[in-house]
Image (cartoon, rainbow, N blue to C red; front, side, top):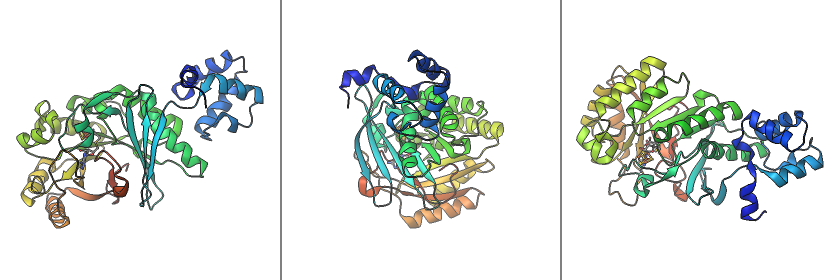
Length: 356
Ligand code: SAH
Ligand code: SF4
């Protein structure tokens, strides 16, 4: 291992696009065709070390080791749950910590749940990340690298990362450009299809419209959790800025523009939003919209007193929604024994959720 300073000075190759990598490689005095070889080792073979790039001469590998590195995220903790969920904590170069999670499914899907920010500025009261406050935006490279690291580990055991969800720490649309940059890299460098990527938002209406205009087939999830403005504002302060009406208008715009189904996230909280009456209000709000509801029993967090809804109320809730022609599925929490997360590290076992 290098000293910290030596490592800092190295160029992180994951940050470079093809052209920049070419400049870097020729800058080392290497022939241009080496760029393609290195690119393939990085993104097709997904090797972790320059030593594994076996068709490169020893001297080239030596230069790469001296001047470059594969990744900037420093692993500080690694936990594995009984259900196969793996959680990672990474330290960024300025000391901020972020979390990423990998969730294997019985049908062979491998989903990475990645962070878009260190902390979050949105302050949703039930969310551990919201309770933590805002650290900073991640760069597109830092967002992408979380998935890259999982892809690399999976490749080493002959497996493939199939899906990515932006449901870790942070609000991706509060860091729009970097999140979209990461989405594009996932598609072009890791070959993950847009339909296998999901961006989840707290409901930033202007960015939902902007996202609709991108012309991407990426899935959109919207965290709704309440149908009443004053109660939603208590749970999710951003509702004071973009109220339910404006949010729904943006969602309708998205559905019309993209013809894609929106997933509405519903953290089901006992006594707060789990009654049949509430399900009818939600059903009326969503009726006719191309959508699906993911019901997530609340994951209790330190500074929020709420409890998860009971299975029986969730069942009645789901049935009432069905009466309005609105489909739903219930998600189970993953990695409970390793406390996998920010409250977001829960996921769909049912097949209702696109991209998950
Ligand atoms: N900021 C984005 C994405 C990250 S949060 C968003 O809010 O959508 C991912 C999902 O986890 C959101 O639907 C969020 O509301 C939900 N979530 C956060 N804390 C939770 C908790 N304690 N229990 C259940 N769901 C939670
Ligand atoms: Fe931020 Fe999403 Fe947590 Fe709200 S739920 S505080 S938007 S990470």
